[in-house]
Structures are given as C-alpha cells and as structure tokens.
Length: 398
Image (cartoon, rainbow, N blue to C red; front, side, top):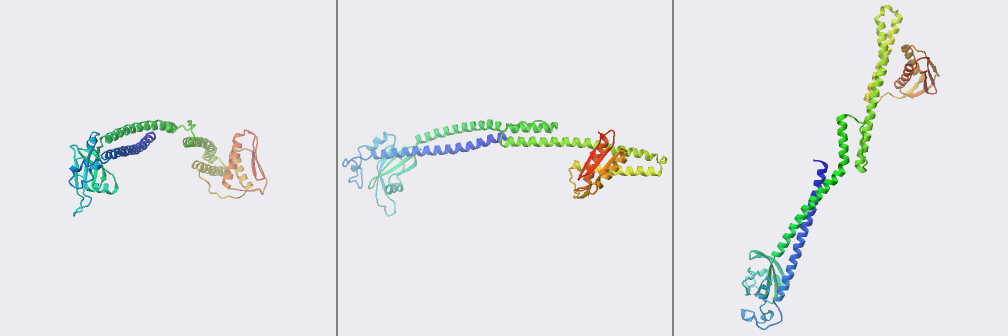
C-alpha cells in the first residue's frame, strides 16, 4: 500500500469518525428539542381542561369525592383536545393508599379515542408529589408522549400526543446526516488523495532516481529537488551520499591505475634479474650475488607495495606506533635501493641528527614514492634528495 493511499484512507477514517460524532450529536439534540416542544404542547393542552368554576358540570359523573371537582373542568374540554389531534382523559383516584398500599384510581371520562393504557398509579403518585410527569408509552400501535398533571386532590389529567412527527423529522435528519457524511468522506478522501500526491511527488521522483541508479549503476545522475523541510533534507542527504559514492569510485579507479603503474617497475626489474640468473653460468660470483640481492630487495619492495595497496583498498588503519626517527636513517636506504634498481645518479645531501616523530614504514614509503617518481619522470640529469630541518625535498630535471 502506497503512502498516498494510506494518507487518503487515514483522512477518510478521521472524517468518518468526526462526521459520525457530529451526526449522532445533531440527531440526539434534534430529538431532545422536538420532544421538549411536544412536552410543552402537552402541558398547554392539559391546561385547557381547567378554567373558571362552572358549578357541578361533572358532579353527576362522579361516584366519590364529587363535591367541587366539576367546578375545575371546562365544558366539553376533552372534545376540544381531540380536535387538536391529541388523546386525553381525566382520572379520579383516592389520595390515600388502601390496605395493600396501592393507590386506587377511577377513570371518570373516557372517549372512544382515549389513551388506551390503564392508568399507572405509580405515575399518578409521582405527579401528585413532584408535579407534571412526562413518559413515552406504546398505545394504538404507536409511540405516545404522555403527560400526567395533577388538577386537584384526587383528580389528574393525562394528555398524550403521537411522536410520529418527531420520529419522521428525526429520520429525515438522520438521512440528511448520512448523505452529508458520505459526501464529506468522499470529498475528504479525494482531497487527501490529491494533496498526498503533491506531497509525495518529490519522494516519488527521488525513488525513481534511486531505482534508475540501481539499474544503470550511474551514480552521477542528477537529483533534483527544491523542496524544504524533511523532503528537501532527504534529497540533499541523498545527493551527498551519491557524491561520496562517486568520489569513492573515482578513488578506486585511481587506485587501480596507480597500482598497475607502481607494480610495473618492480615486476620489470624482477624479470630482468631472473633473465640474468638464467645465464648464471656467464656471471661471476660477485655479479650473481648482486643480482640475488637485487631480487631480494625487489621482492621486499613488491611485498610492501602489495601490502600497502591491500590496506588502502580495505581502508585498514595502521597500528604502527609513533616514535622518534632520524631522517637520514630512513632516506639513505631508500636512495641506495633506487640507485641500484634504476642505475641513475642520485645525490643525497643529509644533515645528521635531524629527528622527527612519525611511523618509520609509512615515512619510508612516502620517501620511496617521491624518489621513484623523480626517477621515472625525469629523463636526464641527477636526482637530488635533501634532508634539512625535518623535511625531505626531492629535486629532478623532469
């Protein structure tokens, strides 16, 4: 899975969670607000049942505690509520519990479309103690919001209203939230896909360059990036790494060329001395011993050169310790070997007693390289080696 896809999916997931949370809160708040409006309407409708005293309008319908109750009720109040698309009834009940602790109740008015649930004495008692009580009940195959209001001692009014409007409004809101949520998630995912594509474009270019380098082996390919921040830093680091790798390759190539050049001289000298030894019968003992000495010296030099090349190729650090060295003791053997091998005139001017701190073998290799180069690249005239003041200077006519 690419980084671009991951970013798009992550943004889509976050937006989904946010939209779901906001939608849930909106639906919940809308339901609470609409239900509160229904409750307020029920409270107002319950108040319509009672008005100024009207004598004993309801007294003939009461079996107990009828005195004064009819004066609390308006003429035909329940019929007026029915016309307003609500259910209503009046409940009269004993205020005192019976021997079994249950508050007795009696419905004194019941219309054909009444609430349809048996009066709940626990709900009536709560209305008597705490005021209007609102509950959600099931009747007539639908959800009703039922309000119970205490009108007088032993008299309660229950008004109910269907919650169809609330449920329909909430359902419409839920569909709108779902549609908006899907649209928001789609737009957010598309936007994240586009922005992530622009954000990772430098990384994609860098990846393409790396793959091209891996295929072709060309470490000199340009790495173009003008980005700032982490991406620009990555590109700059990649360029630095490629530059170091390119320099390392050039050094390796130069090492191989230098090695072939440096090895050619001792090998040529060895070949010449071997040819002389093949005619050893024609050589005097002194000449034969001198040739063998040259062969031994050339083999030692060749061994040192191969060791140095191996160390350079493997990047091995020498463990030779620093010590005080007399320069004359280092320079004179090197010059003598160069004279014997090349046959050239090499003049040494040495001031005795000059010492330096260094590594003997490494210093000898450095002097030998200077002298050998002077011999190789000068066509005529003597080579002069001067040791003075802690320095070694090689003069030639090349």
